[in-house]
Every structure is written in C-alpha cells, then in structure tokens.
Image (cartoon, rainbow, N blue to C red; front, side, top):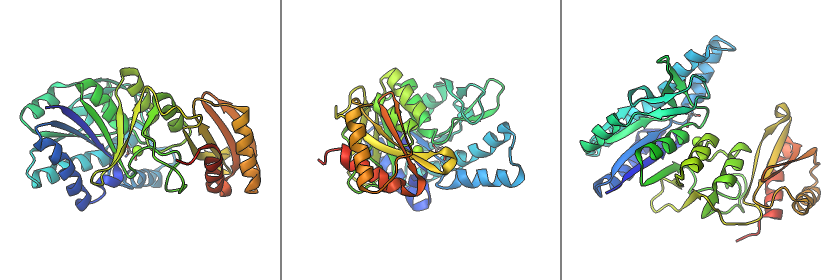
Length: 326
Ligand code: ASP
Ligand code: MG
C-alpha cells in the first residue's frame, strides 16, 4: 500500500464528464488499497476569466484581493471533484490551502511554500478518504490567502508529495508526457522517456507550459520524481529525475519576447550553448526564410529571437534541425 499524489490540470477537470473520468482514475488506485491525495487546478479557463473580472474593476487590483478571488477557482474544482468521487462510491474530502494548512511567504501572486501541515491529510486518509487539495494556493503568516504563480498547482503537488513521503507524484495533463517540443505546435516532436531536473527547469523558464519552474526546483531539491502523463487509459509518461536521456538537445520551446513583437525560441540541453548547434539553427531559419533578430546564450540554453508571426515555423524548423528523429 502506498500514498500517491495525483495532480489534475484545468482541462482534465473542465466539466462533469471529465470530473467523473478523473474520479475513476483515482478510484482505480484507491481500490488497490493505495491512499490518494489529489491536487486540482481550477476548471479550464476559470483563472483567466476571474482575472478578466478583476480587470473590469481595476487596472491594478489589490494583490491580496486578487489572490482571494483567484483561489476560488481551485476551491470550486476541489469540491466538485470530491462530489464526483462520492458519486462513484469513493469517500472524499476537499481541502483548501488554509485548511491543511499550506503555509507560504507573503508574496501575493508568486508565493513560495514554507511548510505543510500533515495531520489533517493523514486523518482523512486514515479514514480511507481521498483527499482533494485545492492547488495553487496557501495561507501566509498573517492568515491571508496567497497564490503560487500561474501553473502553481504542479508546485502544490510536488510539495505535498515530498512532505507526505508519497511513493509517486503523478502530474496529469493534456499530453502524455514531456515532448521535444509542444506536439500541438510541432508534429515531429517526440515524447521523452526521462528529462533531467536541470533541463526541465530550463524548459519551464523558457516557456514550456508543461511544469511550473518552482515545482521543478523543489523536486530536484528533495529528489521527488514527478511523472507527467495524460488521463487517457494506458497513457505513457515522462519521468523527471536527476538524469535525462543525455541527448545534445533535449527540447525546443518558445515564448513571447520584446513586448510581444518577437518570440524567443529556446533550445535546451546539456550541450548548450554551442557554436555548432547555433549555426545549425541559424541555417535552418535561413532555409525557411526567417530573419534572426538576436541570439542569447544561457546556462544549458541557446535562444534565438524571431518575428512573432513566424515563431511556430521557427520552432519547428529549429526542432527538426537539432533533434534527431527517433
Ligand atoms: N489555475 C491556475 C492557473 O491557471 C493554477 C494552475 O492551473 O496550476 O494558472
Ligand atoms: Mg500547468
């Protein structure tokens, strides 16, 4: 019997049907006798919609109130998932950040977790209940609700996995792992079996949406090995751990730059920065008729700046030039 942390992102809990699907994924583990602590994001689109509502009232809403508002998205999905679990015959209890508690510093909108109370979770799992934690939130020393930064539910999941000594930390997302590039943008991207903490961190910082950067730092610090997978039956996965696959380039990602006018396409891997790879990337852009606006070398990274409207083509051209096909 083990304790598992299973985190479900916003698209996995977007509606009743998906919540029931997730409940059955949890139930399958729970029926084997495992204790399950689920962590949920807000239902897809909810956080953006709440930010929009705040902006209708103020260009710069008070950070304390914005956190109070945004945390409701995860509070709602946690309660809904607990109801869905009950409806498939699994006892469940939802808990907000302040109820555990998940203590954080006072940096509203980008708080860091300082401590997690374990007694309440243990009491629930001892009673054979699945605990559904609201991700992305905590409470500071003043008793105010804080949020952990966009995508922060991953961070909640890794922190819980570490604090509770979980056997596995499973991060369910829309894709069945970490790819050499976002497979929705680049059809030749392939799934990685393993990614090193260092590369995953660099990918997260460079714009890969798959895992939150603070979550990767915490995982590295404590040796938690998150598994990224999808909700599809028999999903394959990627494990994030000390060592990756050892290729020169692990992945390529993009993000907006220069106030949105440009895009930064970043190559990540143990061989970077490298003049040879830089030349290869520039030649590939040249062949695609894409102008390079600038180049930046960083730790395990090489970034090329291109016009925003060519960023997807640039991503795929560079990907295909620097990552050997399987
Ligand atoms: N709901 C938050 C966001 O959209 C946190 C998360 O999804 O992890 O950023
Ligand atoms: Mg995410």
